[in-house]
Length: 312
Image (tube, rainbow, N blue to C red; front, side, top):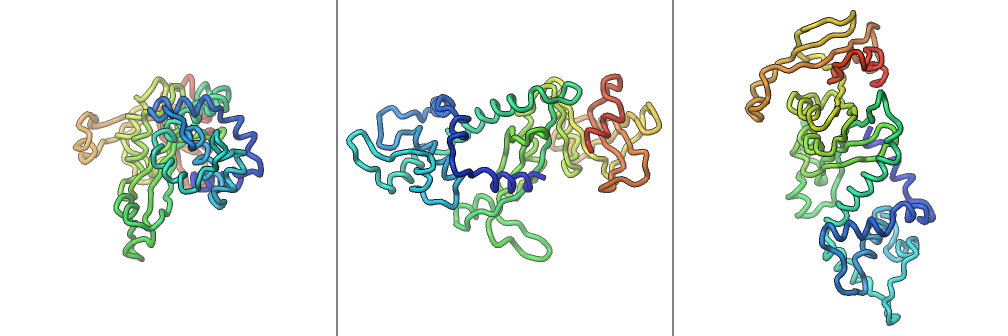
């Protein structure tokens, strides 16, 4: 899902004119990001930090264009007050001075504002809907990337041709806006990156996970991250559980064991944990899903049919 959304974004994100996008990214946000990371230009350079941020944003949007074309798209003029043109060689130096920190801060600012604007009024039973998904990216082959991101190996090939970065994102299901993202070496699993997203979970939300993320540690931590920060995931065929209470023909409160390996990694985990299980009454479902597990244990607020509907 995430990889498809990113491909769609790549196809649609580079319009002929960036005037609308520039209006959506106020200069005040850029200045705020620079202030938060102590990167605001103290003395006036030929390439002030504000301009460098815009250049990097533009380069990201127009990766197949030259820097000169990006400057033209952004309607920027690389000329100082004396009328001297800034040499192209000054741009890489300015990018190194800037570092990645202001761009990360700017991402946090924009995601907070845009997600709130697009999704705050579009809820399910008072909960904002999110999902967590991951993907991988090929990186440029060089020593630094090879050492940091590493390679993926499988039974058919000893290792991938290019270094591979693994990414995991928290996304809005309504607007497809990315709330936060974590990425790094491919040797680290998606559950580990998903756990790093816990601090970004908003209150009064429901996050839908694929079954590969099912983990007592991740689910219980997600549930306790914020007020009413719920989770939902399809039932795996090998999930072990015991029915504690049956509410209806297809609606149960179940108890599941926590593996010794999980408790060794996190001693605070209990030996067993509870969740609500709602099953599909039809014998065959699309994608062979027999039911869903969730933290939505309040039956008066969340009916079994509503829970099945929100997953589909």
